[in-house]
Image 1: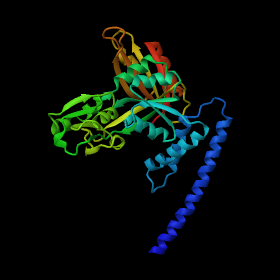
Image 2: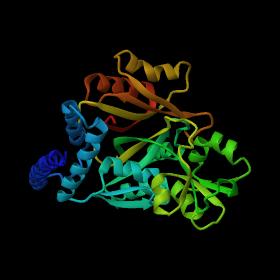
Image 3: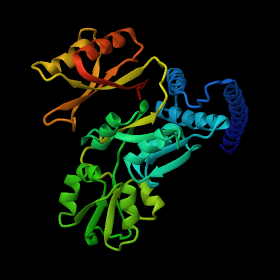
Image 4: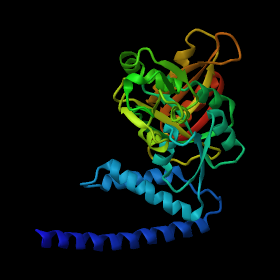
Length: 353
């Protein structure tokens, strides 16, 4: 048995040696490509999406597709950093789900710039203080993130990618006794996502809304009988006890994040396009939004209304459709919609997650 294990370990050592050589070669090619580029853009979402998609198609196990994706995201992140280390802004402090989404997509080898608000993320990108920003756009339980939607309409930025992140909330505290918790800090969305669990287990605890779950964890780390709703990562960062895991009311709770920049993205072959429009004030106006896509069999994946903040009872509509804006059917549909709407803003075409 011992001889067999030693032989297998020797085989693994040999594979590791070959892998290191191949990864190093990949890094050299990436660096050379960086020197040949004339646009200065290091991150190409469409190219990275194509690389991951091809690898998943080639994957024969035993590693899962998620495992292959995670491994190659890390390899790509480190090879990309040989060209230039990206700066990424997200809603902070460290320990937020926005940070987890950033790491999931861009890997560890980036310079993270946490902010105090979603507004600050937008401002950092627009002022070129950072290369990219990561913001939450919608949650499967609680719906759209109002501030992100408003800023997409107001700011002159493009969506160049999306990230979906399963959200699993923990109740974390300095205390080890759930019964002694008198107050709970969390972002408003997280309190809503854990409403039933909190009502059933801590009905008398004061619920205090903060700007981020990580901020709540930071406050709870300084108060004896307080707790926060946050991630396992936040518990580790702030050295808090996990009193209960998976307290979200919906087991499939997921948040979708957007990647913001000023760059337009080329087609990857599996894309999504986002726009925002206002309708003319007439009967059947909403039907007019859908008809250009329906007539060409372009699939809508999102249609969400928001008050326009310009006139009373006037609304803007955020629309996501499958396909890149350069796709002939999508292109014709957008042109048709622009004629029928009173205002249309292109938000971005980008690889589907």
